[in-house]
Every structure is written in C-alpha cells, then in structure tokens.
Image (cartoon, rainbow, N blue to C red; front, side):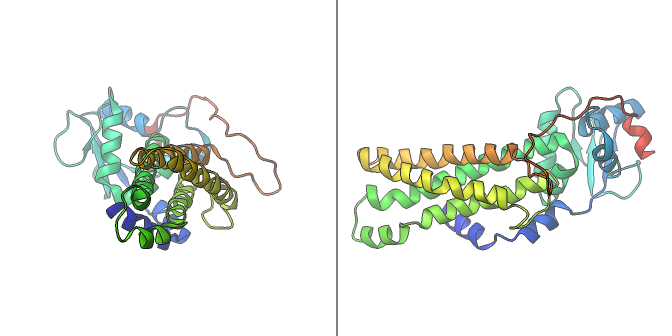
Length: 269
C-alpha cells in the first residue's frame, strides 16, 4: 500500500510552483583537488567542453573558488575530507552519489549541469515506472484474488489507478521541463500534459483487455508490466519533447555546437 499512498500523495501535490522552486534553488558548488589540473579535470566533468554559450556561463557561475562558502562539495579521490568523491576516470558513480547525497538540490543540479541532467532524467523516469507498476498491481488485486471486499475494492479501483498513474506522469512532465530550464506551469507545459493525457486512455484500455484475457495471477503481472513499460515510454517521449517557442513551429532538440571554450578554471577564478 506504500506505493498507492505515494501515488495518492503525488496526485494531491501537483503544484508546478513547488517544482519550479526546487529547480531554481540557489546553490554554490566547490570542487576540491590536489592541484589545479585535478580541479580542472573535475570541472570539465560537470561542464563538458561541448556545453557552450549562456548555458556554460550559467554553470560556471555556480562554481566557487576553494575556501568560499558552498552548500555542495565534490572532491577527487586523492583529496581527503568532506564531500562527494568524483573520479575523473569513472565519473558516473560519483555523479549519481552527488544526486543522492544532495537530494534536496537534485533538480537544481540537473538544471545547471548537463551530465547530471541526463542521469537524473533517467532516474526520475525509472522511479516513476516502478511506482506506477506497483499501483497497477495493487489495483488489479480485486480482479485476481476474490474476497468479500472484492466488489468494494473493484468499485474504488475503477479509474482511480489511472488517475494516480496519470498524475504521476504529469508530475514527471513538470520535472523534466524543469531540467530543460523551461517555464513550469499548467499552461506553459500544456503540450507535455496533453501528451500524457492522450496516452492515458490507450494504456488503460490495453491493460484491462489483457487482464481479462490472461488467467488469474498472470493478468496482474501483465497489467503491472504495461504500467511499467507504458510509463517508460511516456517518460522517454516527455524527455525528447521540446516546447516550441512562442510563434515558432515545433523543432527537434539540437545538439550543442562544439567549440573550444575557455577552461572552466578561468571562469571561476
């Protein structure tokens, strides 16, 4: 029932302003290393060379020089003390640990630093899929395990699991838009919300038909699997979606232009 309660809480707390506040939470990040070369290597993990223009400038503004006050601290394996260890030769583990240790800042970190953005997007989509699969499985129990309360539970289940699953997906739409640094709100994200609502009925119909065709027990697994795979598909579509600029036609997301930017160290000196 934990997943059900979590889904219900998510449905009730769909407040774009809260997600906007989390994504724009102010932070300063200090990078510690044994020498300048080591520090530059860590900075380039957070701000790769392909990140250019205003996005690079914005990211550099969140890095502070050693000794300055900072809410977030990363260090290389050769440096002792507090902070998340970030290995230049295998950065993914350290980047995931950074998102875990500083969870209250994770949307803000993902919005500012592109490598964290990709990792966090995958984590958010995966977590949503697992949560929705659990909700679908719980809602299908009255159909699979008959008991005196089956009718009551079935009546309560009608449409409720779809509402919770869809609400979770709408919440994900706001979070992924925040990672893309797009405006957050029902109106601003009407395209993503419409994408979620358009798919909700189709996934719901497929799940119900499948549960009815498959013997008891297996139908529950099928419904849960559809909720899981459907949420993954919706999450991937939401991540690829790019809100068109006002008055402009929809355009696919473009790759960053590769240039030779100045070392990150110079930007935070």
